[in-house]
Image 1 (cartoon, rainbow, N blue to C red):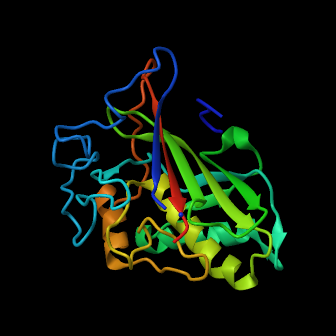
Image 2: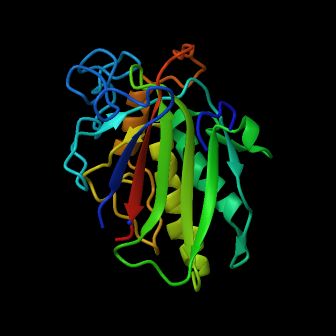
Length: 253
C-alpha cells in the first residue's frame, strides 16, 4: 500500500493494536465520550455531528450495541488496488466494485475511488473470495479493516474483502454484490458502526439479491463526517504515532 504499515448474523469487531508498543487508547476510540474524537461531541474535523441531518452518526450500531464513530482521510480519490480481476456471469468484479464505491461520489461531488496497478501506492487493497456454496447466516458478505491514528481518527490505509460463491447469479452480482461493495466502502471512508435503519445502505445486514440505494441519512452522515468538504486536508500524522486497526465483518440477512 501507499503508506504500508501492515499487510452478513452480527457484525464482528476486531480491534488490533499495531507497531512498536502495540497499544492504543481503549478500543481505538478517542474523544470525551469515546465516539467521535476531535472536540468531545464534535466530529474529528471540528463540525457538529448534527451538521447535516438526519444522520446516524450518534446512533447505536444495532449489531453490536456500541455507539457509532467516524474516521476520515486527508485526500480523495482513494487509490484502490485489486488483488485479482475475476469475471462472473460476464461481469468484471473490479468494474462492479468500483461502481459501488463511486456511488458515494454523488454525495461528495468528486471521484472517490480510482484503480491503481500496484499495491505499493494504494490506499485500499481489495480481495475477492469465492465460497463453495451460497452464504448462510453465519457467513459474512463483506469485511473492511482500516488503520488509523486513534488520537485524530485520520485513516492511512484500508483493506476490503468481498465475497462471491459458486452459483451466484448475474442479478446477484449486479445488485447484491454491488450493494455490498458500496456498503464496505462506506466503512472504509468514514463509518465505524452501522445505521439502525433498514432502508439505509449502511444498515448492517446485507441482502444478496437486492441493491440498496443511498438514502438521505447515508448522504448526510458522510457529509457531516467531512464537514461538507472533500478537498485535500493536511495530514495529522507524525513520526512515532502509534496506529491502530479496526475491522468489521458484515453478514448476510
